[in-house]
Image (cartoon, rainbow, N blue to C red; front, top):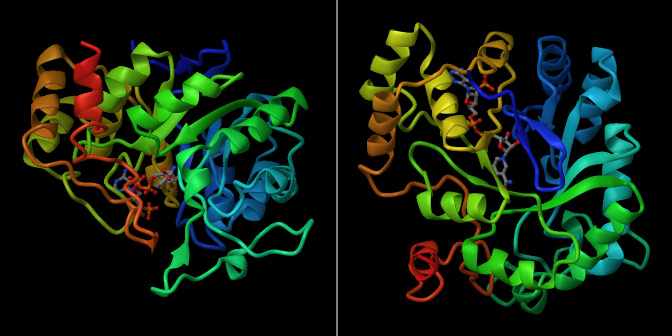
Length: 329
Ligand code: NAP
């Protein structure tokens, strides 16, 4: 039987498939959310940075689905990690979504920008500070040690504003550091997971540590097809009489990953909720395909700021996930 929910380390349940909302254009996302909720979705993946939370909120309201039936995630953006900005950020997100609480609040990135906003004002893009290279400046101390931000996120759980907290784009090394400091443990790490970026070491380590791996860009991303229409995936899809997207999502769920496919197209939204039971041979064939090429990431901001910051540490001789994972075996 295909899995309908995962259970988080704090006992709360999260539906196996969530609707992604990044790059869902204005005028489209409210309808997409309403349609999804009316057609069986109970999990929405949102973020302040997507700039569309007010529309997502309209979609939730229009659906008529009771709040307590929906699992809603949002994310604290990289402009808002300074402790004084965390309460302002959650307030803005809840107001935009029209909700009293979130089910899950994620630290969106393990990087944090320098901002120059008046006291009491939630930083916006225009408050980013430029460095001498013309790129926006990072607050490196707060990137290297996210504890001050995490303490504020823990308070949001105490206050009942969020049910659970988690991280996003964290590798093994940086997650280990956070676990040493955390009073409330992250329940999930939302990272890029797809057939072209399978991250087997990170996934295995997260599962061993009872942190749910959530898979973003599970279909290869907007405007790209990558391996979505690969011949092996297509062959397995034909056997089950489904689309390739269903096979990619079923393979992720079978790996213990919580995928978050984005669509604003009604037929695809409805379709993406269907999971199939893969045979062991089919699972292994997809696994082999995922390892038959170099990892291909869609999202990496490492070179976007000043100084350059190695977010994933993929080639680091000490801190790459491969090295960190091997150390524990
Ligand atoms: P994705 O879900 O892998 O791919 C979305 C693209 O696939 C869209 O172009 C969509 O088109 C198309 N699509 C959807 N279903 C399809 C189907 N059945 N057949 C063919 N094409 C299909 O990409 P994503 O939006 O990058 O990632 C998903 C979600 O993960 C985001 O929306 C966001 O919520 C989250 N995310 C999080 C982070 C993070 O840093 N934490 C980063 C990136 C993404 P249409 O919409 O036109 O149907």
